Image (cartoon, rainbow over all chains, first blue to last red; front, side, top):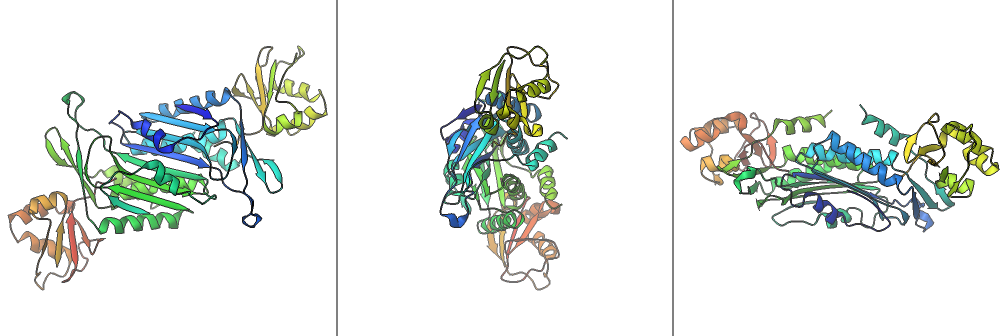
Length: 151
Length: 151
Length: 83
Length: 83
């Protein structure tokens, strides 16, 4: 299940849905991404950010990434929720949840989904730092983590 | 944080605590283990289980495993909750949650904790199957997953 | 052809989207980028660092030799930073 | 010495715990298991498959050559299956 939305989400509720009515699920793995405060500690300020995305393509890419996880692992259910708009430190950005009979499948596919999403889903972060707004640069370590899943 | 208890727990609440008041946390990984129904589909029955544990040693081992995770990864906070007593299919058994500035650290330490807990924490499952109660046998694949973390 | 710009490409070009009549010699993504650069200094500045420009045609990631044609939705944006 | 039994070891021996005066020649875990086997058929049956018996002394996992002494808490149980 894919959702792209401005609103916050409830982690417990979303994860519970993954096993609702399915008693073959033995494990649910999840990852929640939060906005980190990048302002210097002594600045007294907190650094918000704005997430821009490409409506339409975002949903399409996320659905493809989710389908790829289901091809690779025996998954009972998955959820990807990604927010956009203005977010403050501590706010939830993204939830990835995977449910399977086997904990290995749940854990590995959860890591796979967040790694792929980071390099595939068309989102861009504009951080409000102490010296003004700045677009976050992509990290080569994220590309490396994605590439590792191709092996 | 370690808890060994009969009562259920609220996943959303427990995970939110890991980042409460700490805006350096960028990611929270978690694993929830659930009771699977092992009764044959056409039996019409559901298979409950009873978890026995070794009070005192359980808490001690879990605290040691948690400390080992903090030694290996830069973690802001961790939680391990494990239930005991009688549980029915779909019931939550265990929660492992890890919070870090870095998603790699959160994801890897979460997998580490559940893998180690499976082979180290003194719990034993008695399954009520269609042919009576039966102690679950340890899986060699669990030992193998634990050994892999020693490399 | 519908053009979409995101993040700092949107800011540098100065608009989020536009519909353009592309000349007939523009048949591939690389040719489209070259032609866009010729439209003005805002485009030239935005597209200068070509390595940092990712392209999607009809919402799929594509390379510089991918064909483009009238009616396509072509998006230009920097490497993604979600999650 | 305080002995604790868990899971099927508890069921086969027929009790969850007991306090025993262990003879002086019992100085290691392996010797303790041998001596326990001699206490009756329930112990002998429970401890027969020695590979399946894990031992903790004072709540730490130990091997067969680990020392035991009066006052120790010694637990016998099968491989764990939690999580």
